[in-house]
Image (cartoon, rainbow, N blue to C red; front, side):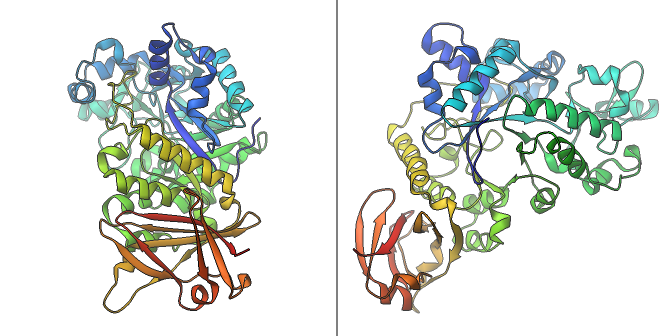
Length: 493
């Protein structure tokens, strides 16, 4: 099994879409066991530590039928893919019937071949887990009603959209507390001890065929969230939280299995405390996209150990494409920022080439879009060069930027540094559409007051600066709109 590093770079791939495009490219049916080696090289580029194959499990035919009848969903499909056909609608990868690899993409043998290809490149494999709900045609619905939140005949009459009559029981449809019920899934009961044991068993099985899981909407299973959502229907909250119990049970057998949480509502710390290695950093995404450098700097003031267990991203399958939400110069600056922060980083297949269409996960075909070769070169170079530098193996800290009474453009700069066995590294990013100047106070008094040499990690450009000035007044930085510096710093000579 490939060992995933402490702060991994993860590349998310929409598996069915990717395989369908490979089949078109090669002219023959392509499952996971048939993927050409050069196609694996394209997604496991240097600097990537793990590939998340999103959507490999057996999707629900009943869930697909529900989606086909949903006019709002059909409208969203047509908006993303104007010539969408019924055969393009595979159903939701988060409406899972069984945790078995879909035979249509190669089944268990195909996934084993995929894992071997990734392992041969030193790259780990992540898969999905959906803890909150299952498809209505999951075997659990008929075989294990004790796993679910129950209603009664009155509930079904009063709110038929929120409950499902299975013939032998009335079960709640899945939901989160802020939205109407999802029509294609059935709600599991996080307080049921039988469900907790079954979840741990499934995750142990999944851990035999991959290196880790990305857990969908993980915060919904927290005791206090679940109790607020379901009240008396869920029963009395257990003493232990869902994830504390489940992760411990899985790790008793699979101690190195990685757990990544999709998390919102400022519950990242709680999930980290309950066993997750990493949690989505949606707050940073929102701050970069909608706020600015002051907000980003404040966010990066959190404890370093907490930040090392966050997942930084600019897009994923739930969010709009970065190329559609940011000008290209801003996206490049933001990419430099997150690539040089502590924590995991998540990149989405198609992000590197500037895809703009946000594809609903129900579809296994996407529109053709021209690839931006320059953007691909930038992103792949960024990941490879940051990886080769070794900077993220050291210790990290945010740095302060100062300006002058008549020039406070320094407030648009975000600066940080790494120090460790690989050396000393400085990142400064201008998160604004205007030029920015400032002085960055550096912490490396051990380099002395002689000349320092700054070497661009991304471009190889070298500068000499006086160490005394850098220590006393700070390193002067002048960046254009959305500009960025990433330097290796050492004593000259």
